[in-house]
Length: 225
Image (cartoon, rainbow, N blue to C red; front, side):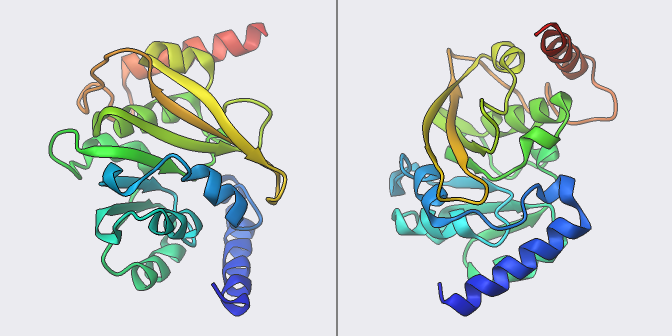
């Protein structure tokens, strides 16, 4: 990427942060150092791959550098301000504008073909209930052995332990970098044991008892710390 393009991306991202800081949650796009860690365990054979919150496409370019085919990428972006640039930069990728919490309802794949999910979503600014919906939706499309790769600016995994336990998942820190604004860590989230996360069971609705129970349990546990 040229210096001019990098400057344009920074301004684009910064303006998005100013307009909605909770949704964007960072003043600048992720750096190349973080992108390399996020994609370090992913290879071409892992396709198809879902990317959540691609923004300006920093992780997308890193995936292509790892040998992943652009046609194997499905980019899920909520912010309308990023859609046209993603479509222009990655014309053979599938770009969908939607809330990742509705992933389970979207039927973007048949079966469980996905080898990895790369997430640039600001989970720390989301409710436990929404995190449950995002993870359950991601793993509903995931083949055995697949994983979600999630970064965070916080000191620990951004997915609370009660949510991991209830969904049968585990999180392992695979690296971190101070060469990012702000410094960040990367976690691999994978199945702890065989568990079917059906799309119907964890679809994101206004009222869903099972998701609400998990979220309430997570909040209660956090309050006891």
